[in-house]
Image 1 (cartoon, rainbow, N blue to C red):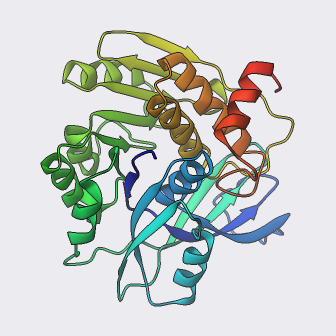
Image 2 (image 1 turned 45 degrees about the vertical axis):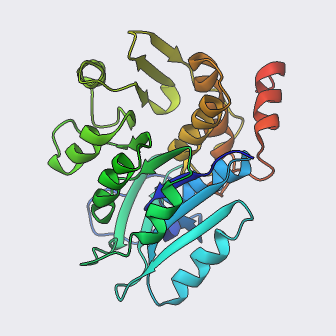
Image 3 (image 1 turned 30 degrees about the vertical axis):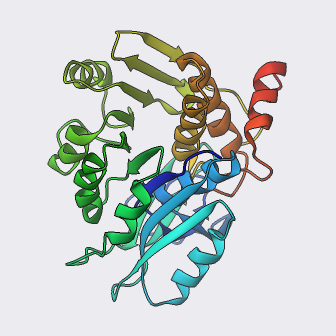
Length: 297
């Protein structure tokens, strides 16, 4: 049986509002095309995709004492997801995501993530003893997990999301990680950043560019490019980056070459946007591999 992946941080309950276009900053009344509530955030997105792809996941997260916490627990009720929940007096994290038909998004953190004074890390330390690797997401409360993973001699993967190249909040995660993912949304000089972190000893860095695909730089200087796979309809782009991360990681753990890992990431990300869920229905590693083999896009 494969060793579990430990993921630290990132669950929320989100309200998704679909609009014809993102609103301009002027007073107005807007009639949405659709709105719905769904589990969100990067830890949930990775856990749901990885478990669907056949990997066992142990997810540490913060939840409040509220109805939203119950809904998050229900959404993550999967035989291959084990939840380690730190219950806080702060309400469960909540976002309102304004979406346009092209995947544009404005996220409002209407209930920011909790920042507890103390966290019981004992269950996480135990989980790290026999895991494949640790994914530490960029939440403030998760920073101590970076040292815990190092003490356990486990590889650390992190996802910087729309890092701008300067925000000091991200630096501890950059310093501790062996493998870094990020998007180029706020980083036009992404190649310079990728080269700098590789020069500083990272194993891999992967940068996603939305519909323009993704690029990878490895420790041995290999530069790879992967176009995005086209889809017939975009329903919801929430979680696409986490789906890409998950597809790539599954390929990596299966021993695939890096180009195939990128293809699996692109395939998983493409399928994600065709669904309102963080992980497309009926997702499996075999399904991704079949898509790639047959070119069924």
